[in-house]
Image (tube, rainbow, N blue to C red; front, side, top):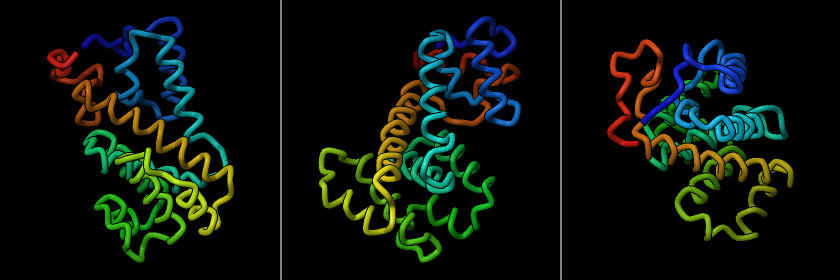
Length: 191
């Protein structure tokens, strides 16, 4: 699969890579590089990321729990590793983070209201067509507002697309597509 290396980026791709470096402490996550040969798609991906994780009504930790849950349920190694790391970088208690990583959603370390979001994300990932108004009302009964529930669903849905993108193109390890990676063609057999 062809990608635009950071060293070779120009124009709109270079600008978007710069924005990503600002968002991610100086590096461009590999998953974004998967669509780098299409600046329009890369721009939409960056905007989608901002809509999920930038500001909003849900706490960032809750969003990372949703992302990690989706990644774990969908068996996306790359996204599971990335969002487990991001959850821990937020200062999340290790027992709590371990429980989310291992899918132990009944662990008392996970706050009840966040557990409800993770369970919703699991259902969306496995069979979204089964979501009912009762499921959404359950989120409200845990104290989440309508805008927060919408945001939780948005994060789960967009993140489902991301895990499938990563898996479809064989993205497994963080740094797999770095400019200095030993195997620059590690995805060439999949794309």
